[in-house]
Length: 418
Ligand code: GUN
Ligand code: FE
Image (tube, rainbow, N blue to C red):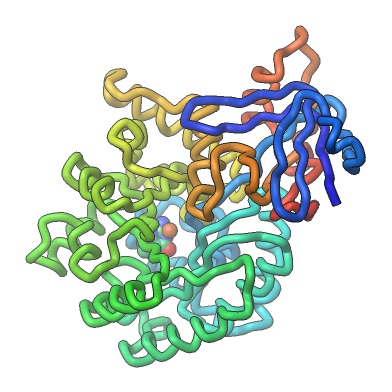
């Protein structure tokens, strides 16, 4: 059956570009998007039209770095730097996910909040627990969310109550991968937590597994200065953080690296050359006083960048808030560099939260023909009355002001999930 959404359609096909179709039609069927049209084409005259009137129809959001178990500790320990925060809060919280009943409760809430806020694609860390990870994947899939979830691997430098042995980590990873075969929209991603918590043997084994099975990889990189020092001590043969991943085959075009706050020109060049994707997490980087990543430079140098909430280093799950925080952080960096660095515009940050990440899942640019429909509908009627605004102005204000109560519909893979 052919369907159409009618409203003001705003897509970001390229960095900084907006495609705006006022009072237009977004036509789709089970096979995907058929097109965006000003007027409903004759051949689609029989389409079932959902008329959203004067509302705004946007691409739905992709959260490309977050920790599902940390949803339970949102907003906690925010006055600590990274390594202290991990020890004081994070590991203790994650240990609770050995309990499947507890995991179910938290993960159901997380999935509901993602849908409510228009996040339909994710790239997520779970905990070390295989069964809780499979449960998380099941809950996300049933909620209509797509993307990657990874069982965390860590076999050193973490509390005994959470650490795996090398053998256990290997065995559980294989058991987890076997269990993933039943999911359609949620895929596994290998997840060495970060260099300090993974032995050389574990990293080598994961790199080999990624190559053998063509799996995606996610980890953390160059987030915090104390962390970087530690990595250099652990791997004296490596000049920079990225080389600790690269030497084990964990640094390629199927790799998502969170943060990269301190990635200098050399590290950025390595990311570009290897096709590594940066998951920029502005809220987290400010909360943990890590720093502000050079996102504009990365984009200028053709490094691939997407956005993440990094729950719970970040305390904001809604990607609308992540987008505005990203813009603010880029402006703080601009101020701090004496206006050397440019800032991200609303259109640019919207692109990073949508098309840039959707492409990881095989999507095209904006609402591309053939892509499964991923969209949110924003009702901005309750915002203060002012002079008549253009749709572009309403889009910008919507990004800054809208919350879940303004998101009146969410579509994922062509299905309405809110
Ligand atoms: N580095 C290693 N683990 C973590 C984590 O859970 N959160 C963040 N922000 N950084 C990390
Ligand atoms: Fe993280």
